[in-house]
Image 1 (cartoon, rainbow, N blue to C red):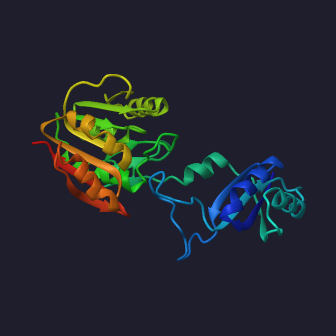
Image 2 (image 1 turned 45 degrees about the horizontal axis):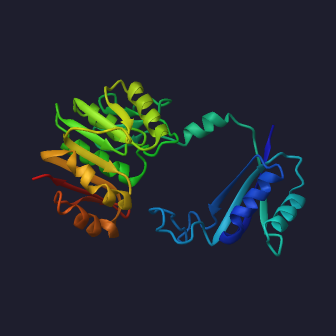
Length: 296
């Protein structure tokens, strides 16, 4: 069965209410996009929670998927009124052929080349380079599929720094990608911790899929011991609060890497960790920074 896609122009103040109204009126799906996406006026929405004063886009587009017999004009008129719009917004309609939606979704996620020898490959793809170190990881609920700049910064740092036989702690493991990468790079004792039970569960499943012996646990459990390498890809504010705890698990002479930090936050994080461990900027990408240092 074909579907009808409605693309409705609106402003940021009404976009969410309009999407909710469309769903309430029977739309199969509704999403909010940047109306200027793909143009010089596109507005990225990265940032730490609280750093974006007004989320969304001033010029928004709500895209709704409805059945082909839907009276589009009536639907948009009713939903615009429900959302508090004074006028019926402009919209376009497009017929969408029925498809294998699982296959379409999977096609959006291609293998990611992190470096010369490190790849992230969804389970439905073949590894592009049979001789590479491959991390099999599917997009899911837990943060960290390798596409975000902070994850890639940490992966590149791990590839440079992990030596066979070392111990590694992934503090805030998300999907487990950094812990799994450390294990594939030769670390023999790898532990990941996270406050989110879903992240711990996803990490365990991903480690099993990659056939590595990394362990994972909830961060509420007591964490003892020190490690040769500690990596934490979280966000700047929690990293500041966690400074004493994170640094306590780095052995003397061991290395620490932090990411999830915007470039303008780097000096603040370096200062917060100065009494525990000296940090410097190891690398930057797309407005994000990786800080690293060695415990004296």
